[in-house]
Length: 378
Image (cartoon, rainbow, N blue to C red; front, side, top):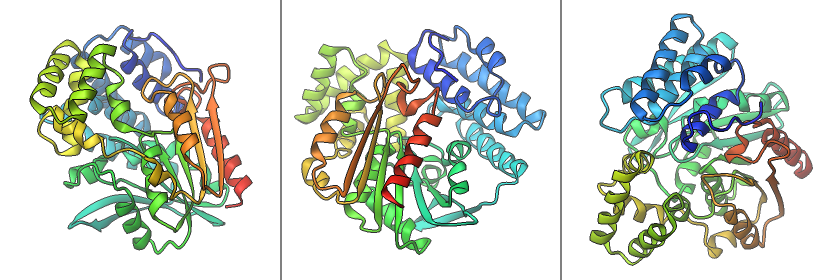
């Protein structure tokens, strides 16, 4: 499926619609979704449309479609919205009902970490030749990736999916987002007694997987699907140029009061900026927008961390990714000097992979990863 533009006229909303459509008819009826979402301009209407679709799909026992619809309904709700947790639970339950409909052979494990629990899924390959450790990004649910990733088991890879701090059920358990991702990663590897694996990080997971691989020797190869070199620059790139540089200056120089004044102004001007800051404070456990952005400063791959990357590395990117600035792909490529091998791929609009995580044609990325795994012999 090609990426569909201008469904609502709001780029971030259009991308989320395409996130569902990229999985095909099993995730939702394309005609109905486009008809229902056409021209949505506010987040309350967004919620009404997607929650209604979720209810319809669930009533019809179309659980995979219901799962994605409820996920979309939950996505833009703020932490204090009375339906947020309910929509998460509906999405979670529908995903697992759908997995049962598929006859999927998997195990759910809740892994002790820092006195709380990390949520994980274990999908065993019958002819195991390797293990893929996979995490999502910023505020992802691991269940939503299963339909795209399950084919790896057909090629002999056992899959371990996990949610660290700030993600899905693990966030609900009380663990907030963290930059030192090697800590939850090592805990997962210990729990499953893994001696060697390849790690794949999806979206913001492009940072998380490389960060973990830099410090965890059991990771023999790491794929950034897609790249993320600097989370702070990524999450401030949405602002108008002058305000962007003002915010960056004030946060970097610890001018908390002035930074919060400008950030509150930006929240009033943009419903997406308002949601993004509220969501960011929610997943990081911070109290003000300034504190949230200070936390994001930790999500960075400086030269001394990149110098620790001695495993095989795969960097993927889309040339028109509206979340992650394209220059981060080139900056990161230049920093990785000691990898066992470095493979890079910038997907283009001509081949249909120009969007973030190749949404619209995610099979391009999956095929690229499979080819890379074959080349490096893992």
